[in-house]
Image (cartoon, rainbow, N blue to C red; front, side):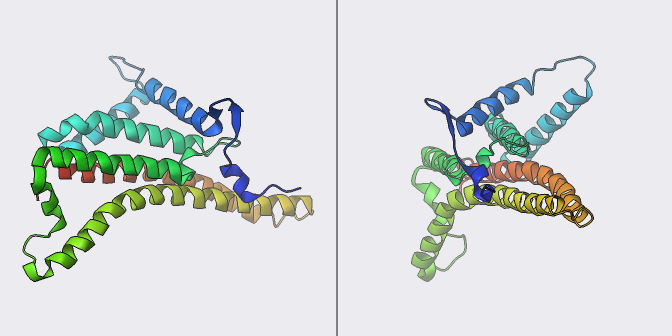
Amino acid sequence: MIASYFDQFTIISFLPGITNSSLMLIISIVLGLLFFSPKKLIPSRWQVIIELVYDHWITLINDSLGPKGSKYFPFVLSLFILLAWLNVLGLFPYVFTVGTHIIVTFGLSLSILIVVTILGLKNFKADFFSLLMPQGAPMGLAPLLVLIETASYLSRAVSLGVRLAANLSAGHLLFAILASFAYQMITGDLLLLSIFPIAIMIFITVLEMAVALIQAYVFCLLTTIYLEDTLKSH
């Protein structure tokens, strides 16, 4: 019996309270901590990569949020390292990809939106709601614009989480479909034709590695943009 393409997204319990999803989260957190372990005066290649990632994010946050935004740097960098490990590890055979479950990605994005809203209200009080009314807009359109901007603001949680889960899921499904085609051609003595799906699978693998890192980057980049609302009044 051929397994379903969606079996790779099934959550399986190993021990009471431990599933393949929670296990991958634990492994990614441990690897994230080990990511910063090398500390040498003369940096190795791995340490150079770490320093490049560190320098890029601290520069990006300082440019986007200013000096006051540096307090968010540990959170954004940690989030990027966690998502990057989760996505990259999910490319290995028989490894569960946590980011394909929208409940996980939506939970992260919703938590970020809630924290941004709380911090915005704490820093600006009622002035925080000024972001729901574009500057220079006629007051006659205020009720309509406020509704539109409110829907747009709340949709951040959905778009941020769905984007990550949808891109990862689509890539994994495409890879599984191509792998099944190649397997059926090989078992059907169509070795020459099987070269094409195998070649495409190699290309898709490289593409998925890029997507895994890019989606983690985009998620954290948008998080940085949303955190700007907690520091700058509209």
